[in-house]
Length: 214
Image: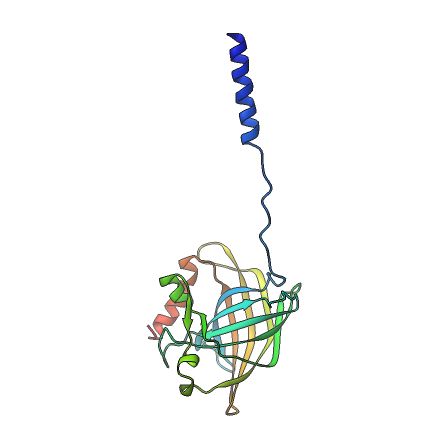
């Protein structure tokens, strides 16, 4: 009987040891500009004004060769007033990135008007967040852009304390769009990385609702 008890105790001890064994989890693959890339929502304030006039949905991605000094930025204007919430104005262009300093810039870079862009509010409702853009659907209705510039662009890790109580990266930059007719628009842009928590987007959703765009 004592032998049985000893064997039982040994098996239990071995089971405990193996159950407590830890295994290394492979680190997720990261892009060369992972401290900068991602999805952001930001208020855009026209130059010389004190209040924001719109909200930008911003996506920064790496290049196909995963360069540490370059990336792509897509900026979608969430102003629905001139169009429809499913068709928004968007531009995409190349940016220079300092991955270590978490800064980025662009100087009179040629823009493209993408067929689809990220719509954070549609993402919340339907899951995919990708919508056709207004410029692709009805180009004749829009003053076509030619170049864009960004200065003072930076991302600060955990730069914002969100309403959900967690930290999120902050983003800010000065942004100029130049149009084919010679006119231009300049904005001061400030915002935060998308967290996935509904309360963290509430400030932006409320602001848009107050404009009567929804």
